[in-house]
Image 1: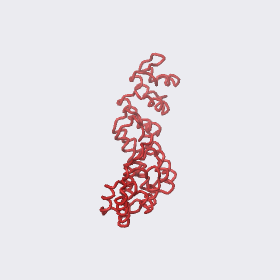
Image 2: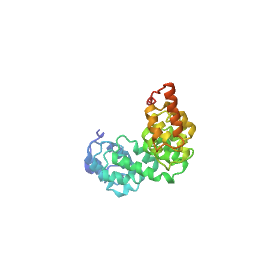
Image 3: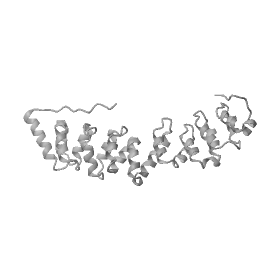
Image 4: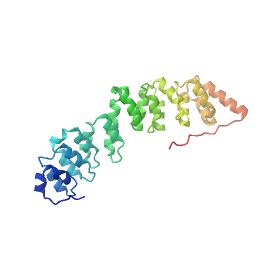
Length: 269
């Protein structure tokens, strides 16, 4: 990129407002640095300039050193989202972002892993205090880790949205099923959900979970492999009331010679 006219550093420092917008596209970083000292250069110009992804890390540090601009949330956000922001500065700025921006940052392809991880941690820390409406928004937009936390949280009216989230993954569902503090209505919702109850590993976890409705457990048993049923029938992790039904299923197979084929659903596209 190049400006439509030639100008030196002194010219950039004293350029009138109509020239400043043109200079925002100048390829020379010394000109951009000079612009920072222009008294007519304001927060709106800073935000426009930070939209350039080719700015260097030293230049971003120079912007951050102008404390008069860091009082503007838009400037702090633009710096936090820039791919070349220094890690220490980026981590500091992430802590000041609003919830919606934290969620957006977790999905930013160019975002630094450390910043995205911190953004997730901050969102998770805020979950208990969030109203249901914000949890519902997170259920639809949050990452897999956030979706898993919302599922375990068990907020009525949010669970169904979480279970349909494209970002929720099998690992997070299994993690929820392994936790003893998860409300019973969450376990029941997973067991009744057509998407997740088709996953073989989820069915195994539901059979082991003492809060899974017995009717759902019984519906799963015919699809469990004989090898796994034998393990389950002797496992202390399986509720005592479920084990007789498992043994009955095994006895029926012995009598009729049936062996189910283990299947997982096709990956969702």
